[in-house]
Image (cartoon, rainbow, N blue to C red; front, side):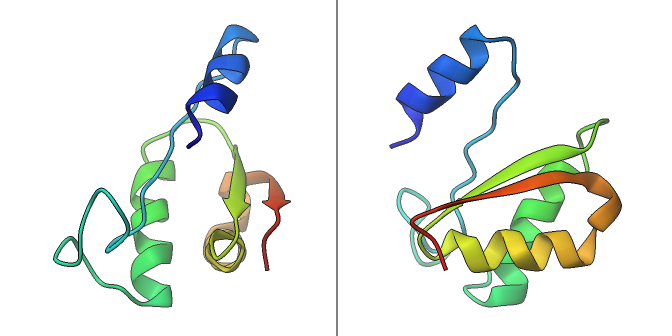
Length: 86
């Protein structure tokens, strides 16, 4: 779903990662904790590998996840972007 957006961002020089939350396609139900802390931890595992502060984009349900991530690691977040999210 994010391939076109990633292509435009990467063409502009940004590094992108599209993270599929546990239990969401294509990962399937057995791929990790399907809880708010589990979703937060899945994103934290990725951003903790990046040297610079990140911009997180959350779509739909992902809005709650990026808020939880920002609360857990505020020093790692440059900004949050909510796309039709809550």
